[in-house]
Image (cartoon, rainbow, N blue to C red; front, side, top):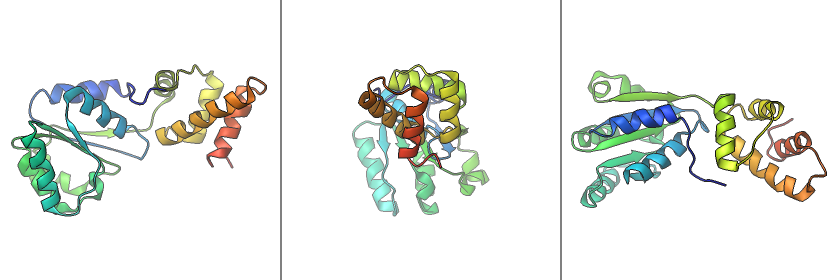
Length: 201
């Protein structure tokens, strides 16, 4: 199973282009929409620092950014910034004069609509849940599985395109497939996998 896979290729390409120059970028989308996968790929592509810590005060954030600068890192990826307090964003805004940032959140942030912030962003991008075509490619690359249209539709229905639910279901599916060793059909195993992960009532 591949942990870092290609996903949202058009968005990944767009962000890469923006990061050729200093940029401030905001990604938002529901849990399981693929934000973390994008951040992991960007960190690898640009040798950037990916920070999952939720900062609660300005000093800790400042120390973290200064440490990255000392290491020669000029791109910082911050996940779950929707949990940050507003004063922390002022530090990020100031540091964005000299560093690139990609911020990720499960929700829109009202402060970013204000002019002094809005004018700083090179892009604000919403990630929606996967459609069936994207799901098929994701499963093929990450789990090396080719699923029928019916099984894909079932997986879309129970997961609602949420990658966390998809990953949990497919991991269970692979384990159960190995256990049954071909004695049960895929649809039956998918239903068991969905039940195991509380996705089917």
